[in-house]
Amino acid sequence: MTRVGIVYFSPGKTLQQLAMALADGVNAVADSEAVRLPIEGRHIIEGRYQNPALLEQLDQVDAIAFGSPTYMGGPAAQFKAFADATSGPRYTEQLWSGKAAAGFTVGGSENGDQSATLGYFNILASQLGLVWVNLDMASQYNPAGLNRLGSQQGVVAQSDQGRLHRDDLATAYYLGQRLATVAQRLQPLQKNAAPADHEPTAAAIS
Image (tube, rainbow, N blue to C red; front, side, top):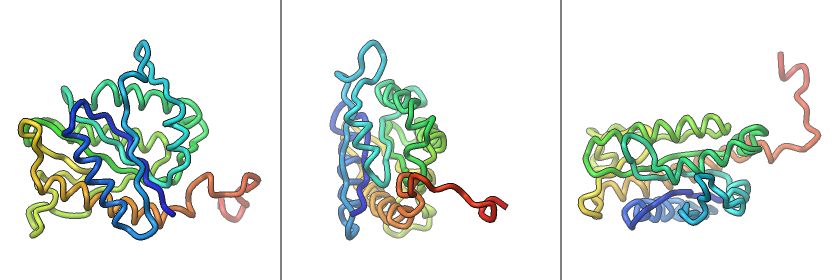
């Protein structure tokens, strides 16, 4: 079973709708299961994210999707607190190396610098050794209406007083399917899947 952790901060229901659509897409792929892991403000104490149980759940999944609304050109402070908490062994020991990763965000306008939030997710994934999964489609040539706002890095949605466009939700569903499919292909490459005593041979290095 391929498990996809969806870790996100949603101050209301808008970003959560995208997380649920993405989870539905993951669950539509055979032998795949989505695990939604919301970031809660009560776990942030004096600016530091303190919920080791959630991080341990992410240790056990095969792929991770990052989600946050875009505030002032980047992810919400609550998501950033979570990201800072990964700077321990998840970073120093690259515990998540080889897992697939993707991102989704929402803003109040069609271009509210939401791509900057996806770019932040991409950099975070790279620092943690994750393999970024983008949207493999050109928006203007897509008859299904997916990727309506033309972001190649991940899902960008526009909120109209808390309501999301159906095409944005469909794009999140599609990304969930794609993320689960790529994660299944990448599972043999995950760091924790290798034997503990494995060392590269000279032939492998040369």
